[in-house]
Structure formats: structure tokens, C-alpha cells
Image (cartoon, rainbow, N blue to C red):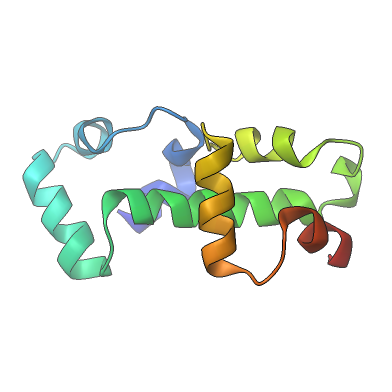
Amino acid sequence: LNAYLELERPWLQPDLSLGDLAEALGSPENRLSVVIREGLGTSFYGLVSRYRLAEFERLARDPALRHRSVLELVFEAGFNSKAAFYRIFRESHDMTPTAFRAAS
């Protein structure tokens, strides 16, 4: 699962669902959900958000992308909601995305 997520990066698709991921992996949806929950200790949404957040952080640190807005990077990282991104970012960082970018 992790190898597939890292190599194929399906989490960049804003509308990725558990069913889509299960189909791509050739696994029943309920089995994949159990693997994510029990094996990785998170939900499908939590797992995908973790990858998207890491991608935003990578993009925000890239000096070649300084001309792009934070919101552009949010959507490029796979988030489809500004509000969801800001909630997730606040939960994991003690600063705004703009401050994070400036500090990077």
C-alpha cells in the first residue's frame, strides 16, 4: 500500500476514494479499510491527508515555486477544499501555511 502510494501518487487526485484505491490495488474495499485502520492506525482520509500535507510542505519549500500562491500549492498537492487543508494544517503545525512557507 505505502509503496503504491509513494510510487503512483494517487492522492494527488482530489476526488480519490477508498473504492478507487481498492480497485487500483485489486483489493476489496472493506479489507483495505481494515488494513489502513489497524495496520497504519489511521483512516483512509487521514492517510491521504498525510500524503497531501507532505506534498504541500515539499512544494512550499521549493524556491522555484515561490511565485505560486499558497492556494495553488494546496490544490496541486491534491486537496480539493481550502477549508479542509487549513484545518489539517492547523492540527499538525503551530503556524499558518504562509508563515510555514516564509520560514522554509
